[in-house]
Image (tube, helix red, strand yellow):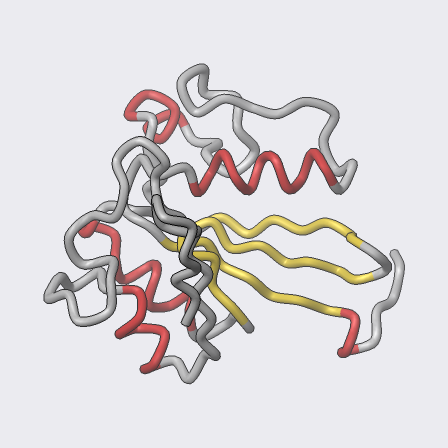
Length: 151
């Protein structure tokens, strides 16, 4: 097994509402790292992180999955978290173990209640990020007039 120095290890989690694409993103990342030879499908029950029968049947993540790969001589540990509020304790626990969180927003559903800062939902990622003392960066695409909305 390859040994990595601590500055060569990245621990990241995915966070979002259910169905936003967290598991699919992790699959694509693993594929691009050459850790898997095909991208699995949530609908077909062929993803690496949703491996138990109930997850495959319901097509949702019921627990946190730990995955890893190598990118540019860095070990990347990925934590794929569930998106439904019934399992939010899994997300809170994952935030204690990671360096950063990829907040995934559905391209078709857009920003849902509780995702944006100031939201009142218990799944508010920015609120939990602050509680876990994680750094914050927001990257927003330009609006229709081409004005950047970065913060």
